[in-house]
Image (cartoon, rainbow, N blue to C red; front, side, top):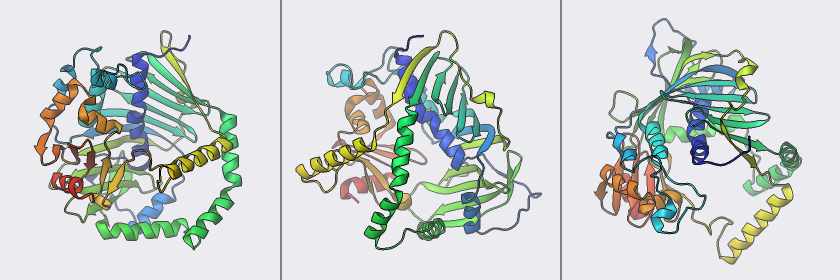
Length: 423
């Protein structure tokens, strides 16, 4: 079938980061509500020993079912997408500013918005399969299914409901050449970095020790009650922020007692009893999945979009760096990237705030780029000094009058202060 691009496939491509997020979380911190079980009595470990168990895990194959739930305390948003019109009623950035289509020819449709709202407020179930370099995520919805396949031959993203698939490939030879160049220069780069630091690079254990020491300044770290997750005996690592400005009350992570793989975690808002966010292994096996689960052929009638990721050569990378440095010098900037608007992080630890400057995507949307949706956004936010604020149990967002957008797992007061003080 001849590849062609459609609105459905563009929506599907925008789903990639949204449905890849559970894979990253499941691989590192996956959660399910944990119930204490008196029959579980694993050997005692300190927090340092438990983190070392995770760091030393060598599991590269597993399969299981994940359940993800979000309850951020948002109001009922079911009418937000519908208020924007039918399936063809999306409003592009270009339409909002009178310039026609936006830069990539895509638009923010009600379907896209509903997908985002579902992630923020709904419950989702997915199956995960991992075996070395092969991976598959199967997201199961009530009315459809989405699949992501990753193998040596590239990646497929398939939406059953939309009958659309995107095939992402990479030039293997060019990627191998880039890896080889990086490997050949690794010692040179290490020597340059150590010369700048004035000391040898730290060992992994030293990095862990330094991270724990830094963490202890802002967080109480402890080992909780041994329990079971997905039928497995697990340790519980508990993180409690020592910061009055954060909305996070506790983060709890469950670690498999045998394999050292995180199987569960929960994030609970300050003062709350139940987690505000959870994503869970309800079943898990550490046996390698059958190879057939990683094979995908687009069903008949599927609209297929081919996308090849360009891999730069080492010479091209050096040329880009030189051009960026020359542009920075011409603009009087201290570094190669400061000439363009860049996100900024104010503060540190649990009370840190991310600032998107005016002119970046989210900030543009806040200034009216969402078209009719911006009016609906007004119903979800409250006016404050310097802008409007959206508050949830775990995250606050300030849409500043000057076009900036400030986001953090902090109180609204912290955002307002950060916007005014710049720190």
